[in-house]
Length: 155
Image (tube, rainbow, N blue to C red; front, side, top):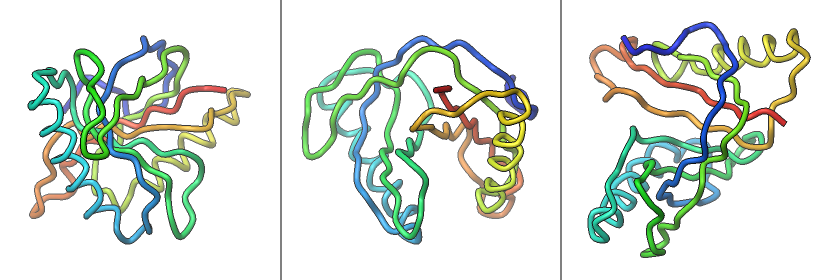
């Protein structure tokens, strides 16, 4: 298991470059989008000789409904040049809440509920975007082994 806590905590992040593909997609099409985005961003970074320096992530802009405004990709050592819809973004630095979710992606909603309740108890307000870093390759036979780090910058 990773070194992150399954209890919410406040961390201070430095800004980080990343390569992403961003789209508004139906919630039931997220899996296909992530697969396409991870392949496209990795190909763009490799073609430009820009090292990938962290695990894949999905960034969410606003609260999902039937659709979600989402970007997915990888942290990179430097910005990529736009290519085939892949663009450079900067993951924001500053104060953020983080919590490690261990288990199936289907149970992530419970971890978000715990995080939101904890933020409320602390008198903290989440910012307008957040991201999930996928720390290990999910095993279809053992979805409970998936590790997802939820990072939510504070307002």
